[in-house]
Image (cartoon, rainbow, N blue to C red; front, side, top):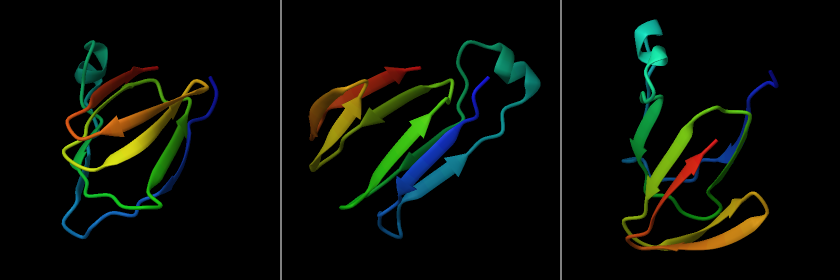
Length: 87
């Protein structure tokens, strides 16, 4: 199994919230469980790159806009957009 890595610039406001969860062994046996959850007010140059993380990523954009690069494609993300990445 390849090692997980993340590269990021967490440019967000002080009132942003990021919570990590360490799931139990039982939770890991279920199809879905939460690893991380948060609410971020991000600004340029915010970005995150991840590789070899076996999980789902669900994001909803409350306002503003950004760009999603995924598997060689680039998508514009705007207010009220939602996306789900399954890895």
